[in-house]
Structures are given as C-alpha cells and as structure tokens.
Length: 424
Image (tube, rainbow, N blue to C red; front, side, top):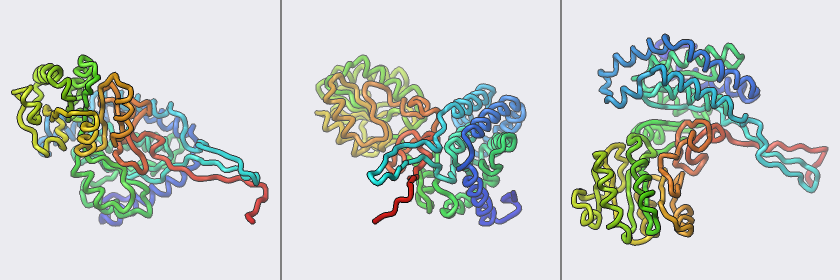
C-alpha cells in the first residue's frame, strides 16, 4: 500500500478507505474460528516481541517533551511489560467472547409459512480516532475484527512509533491465519488534514468513533459525513437521598471521585437531600479534603461546609477530570433529577438510597447512558459490565448507548426463507 508520504492526502486516504471496504466485505463471511485464531496469534506475537515494542515506544517517549505532554499523559503513553501483557490478555478475552456475527436475534414463522429471521451483521468499516494511548490500538482492532468490521486506526502523533509497531504485529497475525490483510490499517501520516479527508468518505466508511478530548470529538462530529458514535464529556453525578445509608454514600462518593480522577466515569457533581445535608456534607468534606479535593458549592452547601468555594453555572456543567467537585443541596428527589438532566452530560449518574420507589423513579427519569443505584459511577465500563472490552462509551441513543463492545459494533438484517410464497 502506498504511504501518505508518497501520495497526496486525498489519494492516500481514498486508497486506505477502499482497501478497508474490500476487507470488510471479506470479513463478513470469515468464520468465528479464524477471528479467534487471529486474536490468539496476535496475543502471542505481542508477548514474544516485547523488546521491539519497547524500542518503538522509547522513540515516542523521547519525543514526548516536544509535544508538551503532562506526566499523566507520558504515563499513558508508556508501554511496560505489564501493559503489553495486559494487551495480550485483552485480545484473548475478546477471542473468548461468543461469536456475534450470524446470531439469530429474533425469529418467527408467518401464517403463510415464511420464516423471518433477524440476523446480526457487521457495520462494515470503522474509522477510529484516538489519542496517546498505544494499548488502545490493540483493543480497538480486537473489538472491530471480532464484530466483523474492518478498522482504520488513526492514533495521536505522540504514539506513532508505538502504534505502528503494534499494528504491524496485528497485520502479521492476520497473514498468519488467513484474515484479509487490510482488515486492520494504521494511518501512516500524522497530518491532521488526513482526518478530514477520511471523514468525507462515507461511501466507504460506515461509522467514525472518536476517543479523546472534547475538542477532538466536536471536530469529528462537525466534519463527519457518516454516523459518529461519541460522548463529549462525563459530568457524572451522585445523589445522596433522604433514605441513604450515609456510610455507604461516603464510600461510593470517594471511590467515584478519587479512585481515578482523569476518566470519563469519574464523579464530578454531588447532590445531597436537604434533610441529610447537615449530617452528610461535613463527613464528605472531611473525606474529600483528606484527598485534596476542592468543593465548589451552592449557598446551602457553603453554610454547612465553610471551606467550600462558591459554585457557578459553569461549575455545575463542568467535567473537571481532577481534584474539584461541585456540590448542591436539593429539597427533593425530583429536584435532583431536574438538576442532573439540566447540567449532566448523559454519561453516568448514581443514587444512594434504601427506598426502592426512589431508586425506581431515579432510574426511569434520569436520561443517561448508565444509571446506578447504590454503587460507584466508575462501574460504567465495558469490562465491568461483562462486555469483555469496549471501544468507547456512547452518550447517544442511536445507534448504541453506554459501553460499546462487540455487539454494539453490529447491526442486523432480515433473512427470509420461503417455499414459493408470492404476495397477493
């Protein structure tokens, strides 16, 4: 295949997309056994080529300062023996998932004898855009191929050498087992204009999936001619109900906010019923303060927690991804629901309550991809939900919502069997 350095971007991106479409048409009839063998062979190659991967990763790490990466970003960029093993295990876990393609989702026999089947099929070609986490290269490819889709991978410039080394191993494994050679393609250029060219090729690419900062996602949504599976941000809420177990609420608050702050399912907003606010907010403030988390609250919160600073409208809508949390005292469950639906990002929202009616109303009325009762927001994750892996979390309602695993990268078609029936 020609590289972007040899051809102009328009010709290069068209060539990649055409090859991906051809590969997707072959993948539609590839057996589940072949895909499993590819995943397991890729896992073996990752484990056996650790030195090669480390050498490629060292080039990216050396260049990290010129890209202005933070220590946390450098940490996400780094490939260690543990992260390589984790990638390999992830591929094996996807291999062990049930084969989705060809699954009969529903079936019926009509009065005239027609047998109507609703059958799971691939989407086609996935254009996946992501930032500086090279392990995502293997994860995304695994989910796409398992679900019968060809994938075009466009990683961040910060990880280009690491991504290329991983993608080369995935392609080698494909050749070893007879998978279409172009089923997994890594975009060879770091030129950002290439993304725009790909996003215009809706006759070849079925869906675009951006995974990264809000700026990247909004750019993809604005430019894409094909559907986009996305979430812009994760302003996740915890509501402590009047009937809450306050010890449980404190534990869930700290885990949701502090277990890992820089991820989309971390807690950003705390709502507390007025009747338990004087009991709960001081203990919450103490626990958050011990972890250096700043509280930005409304007037009633600040009256109970003097160390809290004043919250603004922007604070209630913010995804901090760091040691800040907004807080608000509410008078009722309905007020909490109204606040969440007004300021939230439709990602993950939780309630702590022992009242089943309150839990039922909350889960029905809060419009989010995951609504959690008496547990941490951090559980909104493909692995935690038993999907095996995920390519992202969608806050859309069409076509997929929540963690997007293998089945979320499929569609369906109707297959009809007859015995000579004609319509009268």
